[in-house]
Length: 168
Image (cartoon, rainbow, N blue to C red; front, side):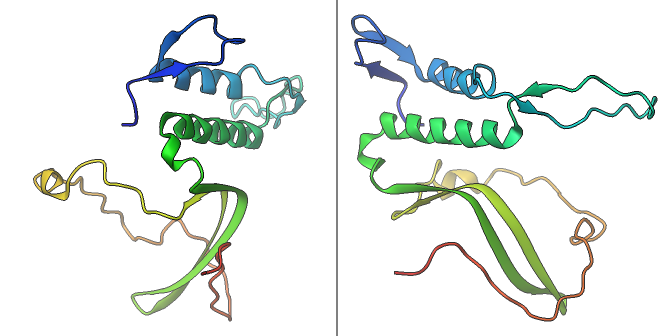
C-alpha cells in the first residue's frame, strides 16, 4: 500500500488543490489505456462455435498488446508519483524473451516465454506482510495430474538459459 491519497499539483489540469483517491487514479489509468485510446487496428476475427460458417463484421479497436503496454506504463508511472524516492531506481523493458532450462524428475525441461513488460529495480521489493503473520494462513491445494501437462513436447538438444539483463 503506497499512499491513501495523493496531491495533484498540476494546476493546468486540476484547478486548485484537489485530493484524488488512489482508487480513482487507478480507474483513470485503466480507462485511458483500455477505452479512450485513439488507435484503431484490425482486431482478431470472432468465431461462433455454434455457427462456424458465419462471418462476423470486422472489428477495429485497440489491440491487446497496446492495452497491456499502455496500462503497465501508466501504472508504473502512478507508483513513481506515489513514492517519489523509488522513481529513479526502476526500469521498464518491453517484449523481453526469457529461456530457462531445468531438470524435472530426471527429464530435461526448457521453458521459453516472452514477457510483455519486465520491471527491474536495483533494490528488492519489500514484503507486503511480515513472514510471521503469513505463517498461519492455509495454502490452497493446487495438485494437478502432472505438473508439466500443459507444456508442449518438443525435441531440443541444447539446454540454454536466456535472460535480458547482464550482471554488473
